[in-house]
Length: 117
Image (cartoon, rainbow, N blue to C red; front, side, top):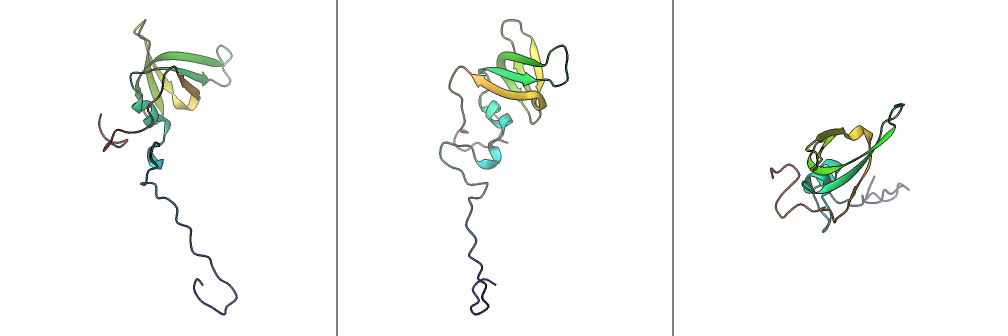
């Protein structure tokens, strides 16, 4: 037991871990650092989305380029400004996303991932 002497076993005190609600300057809080939240912070920006569709003989991998309209836990909605076409892309197929400009990664002061924008 911790703090007892003479039993030959001492348990070191628990290391204090930052709680999920604590945030590190310049970074999203741990519970808000999900892909959909990062994409929501970058709505309106142009992104290139790389996806792989396993076991598909016609198109195994595809690249989608467009403006981020929305993102949810399991999907991304992109729109192609030239054609007006919209894509509902499932996160399960997502490999990675690139941006041609700096991306936002911090929530504005006082806002959280669940706050309406």
